Length: 173
Image 1 (tube, rainbow, N blue to C red):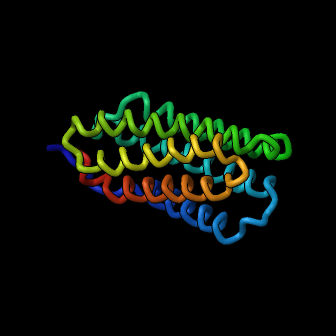
Image 2 (tube, rainbow, N blue to C red):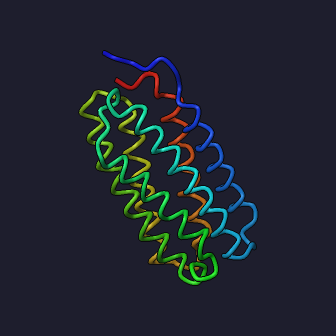
């Protein structure tokens, strides 16, 4: 069994930043959609960059598929969309976020079964996180007025996932 020599602190830092961003959404729900769009855009952009770096560093050791890279690129695209056009996206943010969260959730669910095949114990968390992400996306469509709650839950779950993956990277076979 081949393991890496160090933890991926970039993922841990990105995860912590996303958790803090999610907590900010929970404790300050009265902020405008534009402000939240900018914060979410920055968080997704940072997350995508760290995901790409992690993919490049660990793709052979962790037997990572192209789905991980596609997920990272999607993070960057979403982040840039939010940062470049926050006013335009504020009007449709619940539906856009809902769609992307469903896509991210499906990526994570598919990835969890791929990781399960490698014998990694992280597959269960990945499956749980993917289900929660997809569920948050569906709930955006059902209850768009409550998007702050679902946004906070998804961003916190994404942050916890990144921190877990970064802290566990030395044990990936």
